[in-house]
Image (cartoon, rainbow, N blue to C red; front, side, top):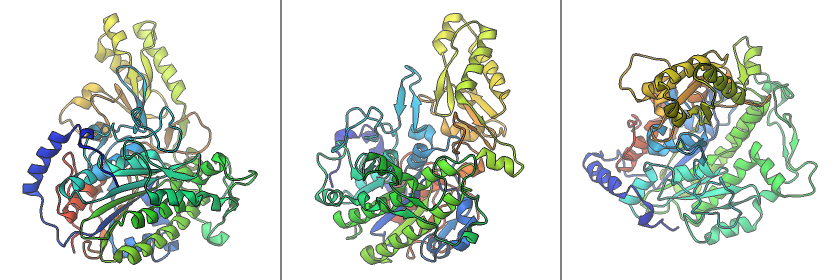
Length: 548
């Protein structure tokens, strides 16, 4: 595995200073460090699903971690815009978006209004696939170091790999010194980019040559349990479901054979996660991960659950059954780690990048408030209201992440009081049925303030140089969308912030449930302590009390 040259580390001096400081303060690990740390990120898995269906899980998947590992039962993200890229950036940096610079999956440059993709980098392309304009190809936009960066700096022989169905799910956990591999929906294979290497290693080429995704053409996704076992989840065919919301489901049905449409369809099924875990197994063998005393780091981000939940909701039978399939896949993967690396030689950590809100229609069926607010229409109403007070003009330019960019040059040219414009914009937005709170730059930049709901989370999500002028928080049960089906995430509400955090490794982790509140930023410094290395220099978290 190739390590990126030193010229790709613009923060090298800062990192060196942090390293020298950390060497003096990093406490020794409780035991010799593990040979391998495996981070499993289940994209879009809310904690409530783990607890709601725990009695139906097998003994050796999630239950192995719940019963024989440490379970942080009240673990949360502390930033307001809970989506895939900020979550994946937070886990191994220990920092929130106000430090990482990863404020969303995509956003707009405040100076130009041009769209920015979280892992986009025009200087690099995929090795064996077409590189689209907004394809993810490098960690250029990640402004802080990760645990893998520290590990490679302090122990240069260490290997850091990350794999995911999504580019951002691999690139951000890999940091700047690791290597990312990404599932390609065009071909059903895995690729990397020129940021990491000039050509794929032999083991990756061999894996791809076997056409691993093709074996799922015609495969059936069938319920694992009898019908009555799904009584606690929403039956198939609800009006708010996206297409294909029923089981059994035959992969590739109606298609002539494997191709891009089929390979993409695997995402919303258990089979994309099976492919990703198979590639992770190949990486362990091909790179000899965990084979010696130098700790290696492997991040595996499983994207399927996010696609399932977006289409049909976390309360659906589809999602319920997908979790059961995922549990079986995890059990098999953990058993393989026991066999190949050794039960006493690795630490496994499982978490999620965000939770999921119930579909508004489901909330309504339970007597709770909820709805869908069209983001484009909201922007139009805002502009109309601002024009009525301040004169004709497009005062609100666009949504950016979960904020709204205002035309500050227009404000200056017209001699408008910026604070007056902010306050009027806030008033207009708060009159919308789905808006709970709006924060402007002065509030976000201010120091300590009285307890204002959602303000701390908004500050953690807001980056001074990158974020929009106004940060908007939806009401519980509400989502900004132009779609009439499916559901999403991206709020500071409990259903989006509360995710599982599970540690397993008998030599390093004392089993048991921990009910004290924890944050996802605590994962990186906790692992750093286990490894006997400094925490990432921008980490905001604290080591968790896991030592046996």
